[in-house]
Amino acid sequence: MKLLVTGGAGFIGSAGGRMAVGRGYQGVNVDALTYAACLDSLAGVAADPRYRFEHVDIRDRAALDRVFAEHRPDAVLHLAAESHVDRSIDAPAIFVETNVLGTCNLLDAARKHYIDSNRPDRFRFVHVSTDEVFGTLGEIGAFDENTAYDPRSPYSASKAASDHFARAWAETYGLPVIITNCSNNYGPYQFPEKLVPVAILNALQGRPIPVYGAGQNVRDWLYVDDHAAALLKVLGSGRKGDTYLIGGNSEARNIDLVRMICRALDVVRPSGRPYENLIEFVSDRPGHDFRYAIDATHIRQALGWGPTVSLAEGVARTVDWYLTNEAWWRPLLSRRGVGQRLGAA
Ligand code: NAD
Image (cartoon, rainbow, N blue to C red; front, side):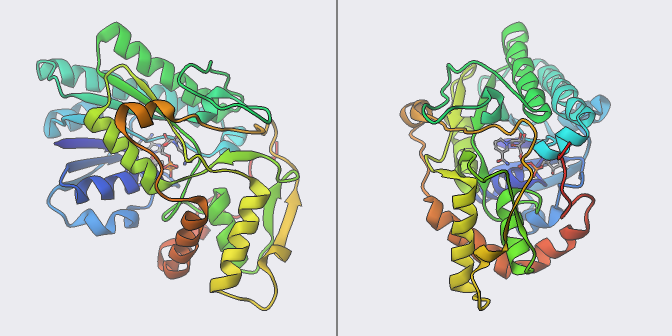
């Protein structure tokens, strides 16, 4: 099977790409190489003849048509996006351009390819989205496939819009679309602007570890390889037109997750005083959603998928990975915006 992956030089896309090539798929990675991209994340597969890279922006329709015509993929796994909520607060327009217009371009280029190929039965367009489109939960409850959309940040609004367009291409044009909405991911190769790598790398550098507000916000954390496995499962056996919510069943308050990271570091890289002492509470993110949680019953029952890595195990693995892969993350610290407070508005 030949897979066209967009955003394959990003965090989740590279995990999916490594797993897919490892499982024998041919993969074409379409990526514009924004500030968040890192081709080194694919170093392990770059020389594999089953892997190809296309330096293409999904906003460029003509380039997408050329890529589809040249590679003739059997399926699309669409991950390319602007993905950082804080950046969406400072500069929302690029989120509309890439996440909404770029997704429309890709959907339409895929539709043309699907029709030109005589609508093959096995063709799938998997649109990878987030649980943030559902807004915020109170202390109890969980999102499921019937939860109404209620996005509250420019990022989640742009992802919600892209989900609606993906459904529109399924209903209006008959494109075999599947949508996934996943909870917060963490693990190796995550760009050092998201909570987990920020906590690890600031601690290692003896710098304050910023925690927004009082650190009470709750997220449902999923180890990235579990997400990649879920996406491959959806590609292989997901029902066209269906939606699958993907979650880790591992809720944690931000402050508890950061403390867990600090304690893991205390064990493997003791510094003489607890890393927790570096935690610094900073002003909260505007409109910060209080809690997300996923009820993943549908994907478990329909496709037999469930998370395999516990939060404690995943954090330990992630801390170990950043300790042994400084050559990967060190150059990223000088990219624009990294290490700065963004989205304080
Ligand atoms: P990321 O920011 O690490 O990577 C995004 C990739 O997309 C980068 O390689 C970037 O160069 C590429 N890209 C950006 N704009 C592009 C454009 N116009 N054309 C082509 N490529 C472009 O993101 P991630 O964390 O890996 O997330 C991937 C997808 O999964 C996103 O759609 C995101 O909304 C979704 N998602 C992420 C999480 C999470 O916790 N990280 C959770 C659920 C869903």
